[in-house]
Image 1 (cartoon, helix red, strand yellow):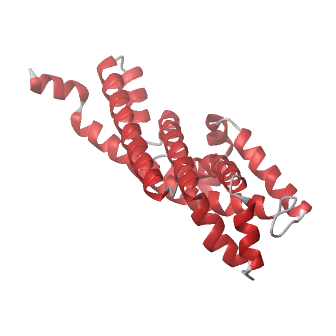
Image 2 (cartoon, one colour; image 1 turned 60 degrees about the vertical axis):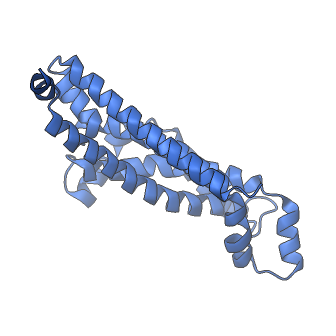
Length: 222
């Protein structure tokens, strides 16, 4: 009976799809974390009253972030097909989903970074300036360390969103649990595979949330 159940849910394919989802999520989260912090810092330091106040640069980057953050992910996938084919060479497989995942998530996370930086006590920044710290030193030793708990909390939320993005990417054959649930579950009317794929996604989400909460508490100095 157990063998029949394992055969029905295609356990080998399920494991392969789970690995693909974890791969897509891990790579896209890592790149999104770096790009998001860079974009968020640019938005913060070039805003009014920022370390390098510049209305033009702030407007340009703010517009870029707002545009890409506003496009629904499934539409972004379609829009980026020519770009993805140019850099990856195909629209099939886990690697083909990475450009859309990163471009879709980085602007979202950048706004969370900007919000986290704005919540830093201005007195800490002013004290650093009074002691003669350069702007780069303030960014590296004050802004990022002070905002780290919020940055980790933000990337946790973003990572969970990316898991759902990978599921949507699976609809256009990008692999992962979303592709398994759609192809083997929905199209072949196998509700058990859809259910098991959903449970696997939930487990991944719970693990991400646990890891995020752990590191958020570890870096919180309050």
